[in-house]
Length: 467
Image (cartoon, rainbow, N blue to C red; front, side, top):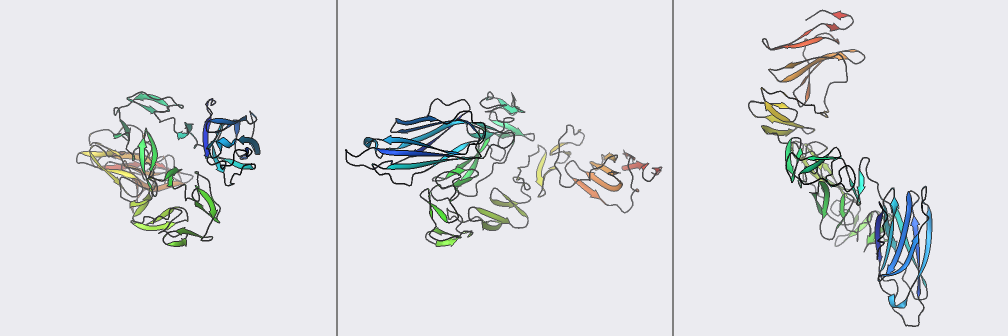
């Protein structure tokens, strides 16, 4: 019932269309089925192969013009005949080919077939969203080949047990089989807050589903009766943006009923939510086609007519459709990052970024804690919202008593006179009343006996000789 000779790199979509012809007397003529295939202008294709079968018996096998160089913008008709003995059977229509972008099929079988008449069956193909830059489409799933141990470097190249994929190559897993490393801490491979080698916190659908991590990739597990359409769990029977098929949108004057777009009985701007009846599209208590109430803990619920939104209270931010505390180390900042747990300390979150509080006898080293006598080694780039402006020729010294780096002045087109301290996690600007004049190229060092940073000389309007 489907094309088995798929070309390498091709993809296959199968569309089932039921009840092609009604029962009739034995001397009635066969029913002609006219298949109309619409190809979108934005689709780039090399080849297309089409098959149609009824009850396992082939009706149609055809190839569209091969090696199409550019976008396709055409409608192609095929006429096949259905015998009386096959009336009411299911037709399976399949498409196979090589594409630069994925194709999805959707059928319009709204015309009731009559014997002796032609049934017009339209199959529309539309381009689905391509994978983001840097990802590959492997078996219909977008994946990062630099970290995916099932597709390491390229599709279908899996790492062995006890290995991970790092920088597109398989290597030994320091955490052991079944775990992976995130910021120096080992987590189970199915941890949805640290999923895969990228340590991604899996997004949670707003309603009707949960997030999970499987084979190092985030996935959505939808409730019974709902299916996943990119980023959400929807009911294909009622969702006007995914009516019958993901991405199939009804017009603004229609609603989705039983997977078909029909006229909206409530009129524009309203939708029907039994038993409440017709409600406004932006009613957060009956949001979208599912008519589900929007969650609003620690915030105010909103509805854009399709999906729920949140306006979080002060001190909270949105993560996965929920309002969480700005101090939450499980969902820190707008990126909703789960902060790593240091061995000799505790993670912190200031509402923007992760930090650490170290136990007695230990000091911060990035997002880890080292003994006070230890040396913090190894480079790690920190994305800090608060930091000194770009500059050159600044003076810097390490204050080993207070465990901070002190920075003064420098040049960015003009000489600077600001003072900053860095504690291994965050920059803080200091504003002492007495400070050197603006300058660059000064020398600075820490005096451990007097526990003072000493600065000498530099260049302002002229060479300086002060201490």
